[in-house]
Image (cartoon, rainbow, N blue to C red):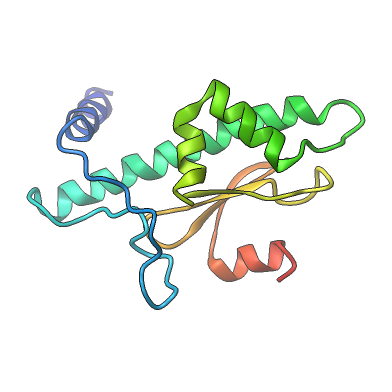
Length: 150
């Protein structure tokens, strides 16, 4: 238990250190890897890995909060809120999460039913965290495309 607490404390201390600006530009070649702009500077690969994990956790937490909003807004009849409605609510209530959308780290999907993909986040390793009514699942580009019917 002490080791877990020390690890969490280490992550908090490292994440409170120097923050690089998150890049909103997609790297050349169309690859999704490296979108977060993690890396470079001092600290070595171990620190960069921890920063990547913190960013991944932040994005997944944001998706969890978006899930709560969409779940509540979809109501008993199951109608899904419009992307614009969800985004406007996030701008008012959770501007940090709206910035993730502005930076294209999270994409709101215009789902018509509860069974569709609601949103997804681009994770630092080039994978995706996909939000559905079932929760958040990590998927590859190909798996996400299949879920979206592409």
